[in-house]
Length: 538
Image (tube, rainbow, N blue to C red; front, side, top):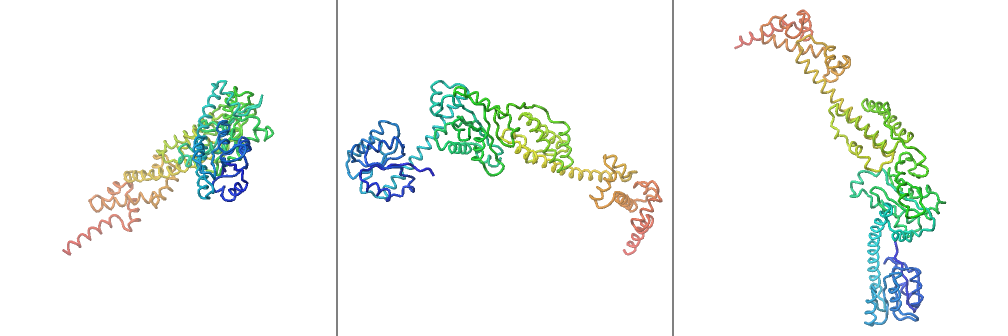
């Protein structure tokens, strides 16, 4: 908690000590940072300590309370809130106090509850003031930073910033980007700005800690859509022996979060004048291009990174085909290895971010084409949308690899499901074909050829789907139809055999007897006897 700082001013030591013991200052949001027994000493304390609140008596030697307030207000160096404590119920004092903007006027003897309530009211007012100042400072610093980095800052603006940054002559200045990566989509969906405002607050708190709480450091921040820009003077790097990497690691440690979220830090080239900060900004932007090369550390220093030549090359065709085949064939273990090799190649071959984007999009498009050829519904892939929009987010190479692996695995599983559905639909088509053509001279081999399948595989698939082998199913169809013809027509046996697909009548008789335990003639004779017996019973 941030305590409000207060000083006590009263020429009676017992009054001061009594107040210290009487009031629970911390519960009211305050710490007493010093005391004075006259207005002159109090004035020196106020200018030196810059307290938030001054609690003062009226009647004091050297400089009374009203004169003390008048001096502070007139000078305008600091603007604390004043609470007057007095044993004199004098309306004139109250009038003067109001004129100088005194916050409260409390009479002695002091009532503990009344005084505590007054302190709480002041504390709330101070908190509100701080929030308003912070909003104003952020708006102002945003506009000023914008002018600096686009090179439109005039001389007066430059002088103002040099004072704010307390720059030393010839002090180096860096422009630094701090970027949050791999932020969960679910979290971003619950936050209108994807958590950017909260992240900016965290960066500001980390920088204040690094600068030992110097409030001027808050003016270094500027939001660039999805990352935070900072002007970092050499004086800040002194704590890290001038090491940019040490500063970057400290930022990463301060902003470390749970889960997979990572923080990247990008340093541009230093400049020696604030008027040249645009150059530092441009080189910091160039550092962003080396992001995937320095994925392991998440720290990119332009001076080092610019020694490497980035490549804008296409995806290796063999690796691409291998990836698609393994997705189609559901070789999950091999697929993981191929994805690892793919992402290692991005880093080792110094792929620029745009080249990585092109390669990933090529792979995604290839998978979508496969799904389309199998009449799949790509909207059923929950990972497809994040995969097609990943370049609008800040993703590390590791984060991108996790996302792509999820997409590849989900796609492979869906392709396997589609293949099962196709097989199921395919075997139904084959059955329908058999039922329509059983009276012809058909065979398993002939049907397999018609449907571009292996005969052995088709036989196994048929047995699995219908619980019987192809030949048994075909025989059952033919025999059932033969029985119908024997019941309903007077066709001769060889004619029935011909009608149901048997070229040899004797073979038909043999197969019929095997299935029905009687010959076709015996089957027809039995039907005739049963019919005659039924007529006799009538």
